[in-house]
Length: 305
Image (cartoon, rainbow, N blue to C red):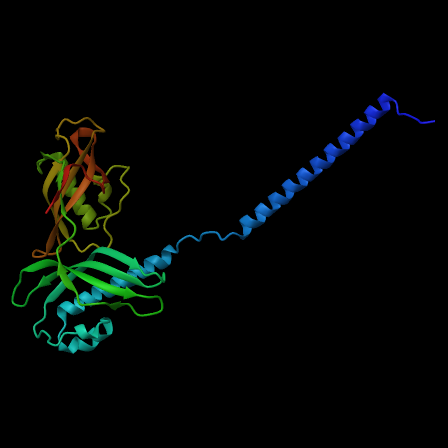
């Protein structure tokens, strides 16, 4: 006789089969996720990470090129026939080496780089440098110096000597000048207590009188007199302030000023210097120097030719 399962038993068996199938699919999906995650980590780990630029090497390379460019310009400006061998070493284009040489060369000082540009070849190694270099030049028999600019082109490849591609050429300065109007419109008489304080401070600070300096400075003043100073005396020339000076300023009032000081090495050797500072009013109408300021107040800054 044929046996039949009861509906309850059949339903229970079907539910167990479906539950087992669901577990199997869940296991497969979880295993797939683990495999994909592992592959992703492997790919990420093996992928080449971009290396940061070697800033030290880049700086050294620019410095080397600039050194060569400045020396090359100085040699070109002052060269005589005795410098022909040195010129051959520095210039790649041997056809451009001068056939005639000056016998009374220029005097050159203050050689500085005004601009640098570069172009890297497709090989990623060879670099062509373009420099604009300024030089102060004094011509023979003339005491008046002029400031002139020259273009220098170099070729640079790692492991080889940097060489000039061609002779220098004069160019115009590529940068305009800047005209700055300082914002110290008020004159302070040197005969005031503020003037006396600034004069005494300058003498103590610039002639290295460490012992007397605290008498002319506030407790917040943290600078020390100039070490190894060449100056033996100072003289106050002028004082200008950002706001008007008043003899009745309240104690604690501060004022930003800029002082011109004559700093002497001897009776015939001296420099005039500008000293921006912040001064503070103390008791009895006296003043002390509170700080030396590196940044100054200005009302206008414009480009000029």
